Length: 452
Ligand code: FES
Ligand SMILES: [Fe+2]
Image (cartoon, rainbow, N blue to C red; front, top):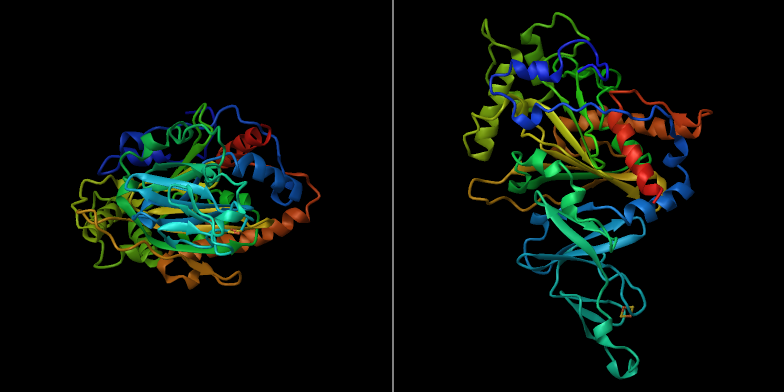
């Protein structure tokens, strides 16, 4: 495909051509972005309070956002509180197959009804005791005689829309929101084989990031920075041959695929033994007995085989048929505005990014690991979220394993990016055509929402 020049060297699809367990059809699709604007992205959207205030109205109050996982609220009355800038929603299971999201504000004098998740039989305000049942109907007004002017039937809790996909619960505050099904575009088709609905949150770590939420997210949707920011991985990570997909007419979804178990195309003459040794050094998942490479074997093939053995053991199922790419590679999607779910089994990550309260120059970044449930569907309770302090590195969260070092390297850069943009004499950031095409795509969709 010559429409957009990519770096010479084997493409992701060339690597798939030689895989032992072939890549599924959805991974064989290649869709480089076409017709994107080359214009710089104005930097004021990364720090301007006016831009941030418009984002609240145009983006946060008009898009589908990940609120929680189904396993966070398995029983009737279970709920989480989802906060996004000034808005707060109580996302509560009200029936075996029913989840609702109530605006978290008492209809008497505005008190927040819940400050955190838990399980309740009804929603009772702590100030004067107005009480709503789980269906949102007002049931109790203490001193009812004093409210002859209030019709209880008209005092139900206002609701946001709720939808579910892949074991995730989403909310949308817009009354006229498009259905989640159409909003997700091609995402369900792409994730059909990844079975995120059969996973549970095994690790959950969050940290206040020293940058705008968009900057944080953008650092995780391209591999162009890997050679300089994460040079330790180049022996086993195909950075510059990463595939970036933006589909015509698809507004909310993009993808990148980076192959692992092959060296960076920038490195020449790396023997397979070194690829394996460096991957095992950084990723304890591949540890264990030595991995020998025979005459007609490849490092990637052997690492995929080891990954399948480990995955099979950890989930108690025979995964020997799993494709090499699902066993090894970074298969990362983005769902506008702020969710980054990964496919495959190798790196079962989902990121979520949001503003840190009302501050456009800091953000809340979360990393979740979604592990497979047991074959009978059972699983441990979902991990409680580890909240790191602003000065704590991600590596203080042992549950992140080897991912923490990478994210710490990115976090150091992000602090410099936020400050550097403030110091800039140039009004926009200049993006690469191909390797930063997902960032262009994100901003095109963002511009579209902001203009509505
Ligand atoms: S503010 Fe909630 S009952 Fe008074
Ligand atoms: Fe990075």
